[in-house]
Image (cartoon, rainbow, N blue to C red):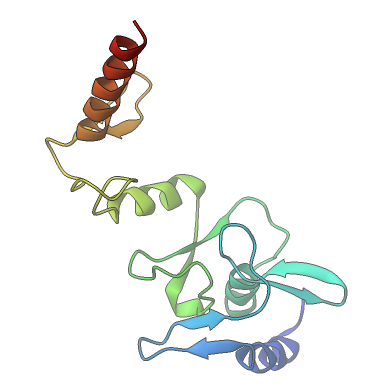
Length: 146
């Protein structure tokens, strides 16, 4: 893990590969993973830039798997690596943040509020109007093929 001086040098170097927005988001313009999170190589080792940023600023062990680095609810950019927009959390907290920030169903067609939200037996939530559309379309296909 880099020491504090090396961390400051890395921050300055990484800022050259970032766009700083008016809202103080530090948006990584380099390599991104499939989830849109920034990736960077230091001494031939690949790091998630948001995890590296939080670990450097809070003196945390990067390799400690007991936590994950989450974006605060107000930060909607997975490539943002501003430590002020990050917190040390859990997977469960990350999922709660994601669900609580949803405004529409995953198809973007319906508002994500009661009575549009249904709960399956396994606890997963779904969009009732979308499910109704799927049932109607399935019925129409069966009648067409009958």
